[in-house]
Amino acid sequence: GTAHRIPGYTYGEPQLEHSPVTIAELDALKETLLWADSDDQALRMAGDALADQVGDVVATWYDYVAAHPHLVAYFGPPGGAPDSEYLERVRARFEQWILDTCRRPYDDVWLDYQQEIALRHTRAKKDQTDHVDAVDRVPLRHIIAFIYPITATIRPFLSAKGHGEEDVERMYQAWFKAVTLQVALWSRPYVREGDW
Ligand code: HEM
Image 1 (cartoon, rainbow, N blue to C red):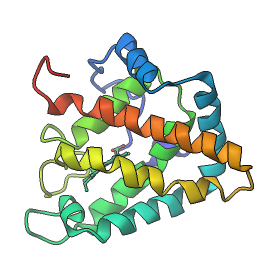
Image 2: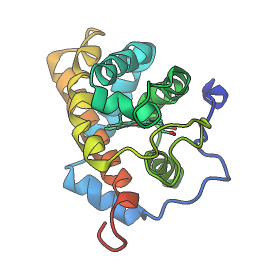
Image 3: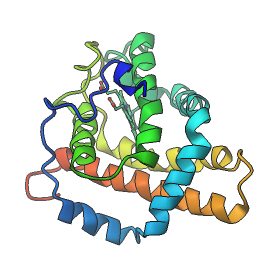
């Protein structure tokens, strides 16, 4: 694949720190989300439906972020203009994330990169990957609220490939679960030790 050529994309690389989340904790979260084998299948189907559309999907999300000054603010220095180079570098990783969400096994390697993505939104690691001078954290409340647009906007892309309404609904529900699961994981470094 071409994934290794994406600047700053370090999925599966040995220098990554290990996720503090256990597979048992992951399984419990999936159970809360009523995760079934059919969701794994639906995500594979979604991966095939979305594969040649990831550019358009992320363009939709970027338009959404750009239209909201309180969101695009995190792509620039405090009070300053958004850094377009930063936005473009993150765009490539965001596109890859769509495929990873649909196609990667949710195993230890995946958990480690979940931890990395989480930290890249926090004071611990934001801005470091792209060596930029931007606001140093994305507040957790915005990440939680972003579950809705990331989910609602995916539907037209899932239905663009001629699947029946039932398959579109299965893919949509599985996508919603997968995004919620990841945001639950990403909340960990934001909360007080012992409270996650
Ligand atoms: C980075 C997804 C919420 C701002 C990323 C990346 C992904 C992602 C996949 C790239 C990870 C990588 O480096 O491989 C998401 C999802 C969200 C969410 C699924 C919620 C459901 C937000 C919100 C903001 C935001 C609300 C604020 C506008 C950023 C920024 C980066 C980033 C600034 C670059 C971080 C860095 O410096 O490395 N996000 N994000 N994200 N996201 Fe989010």
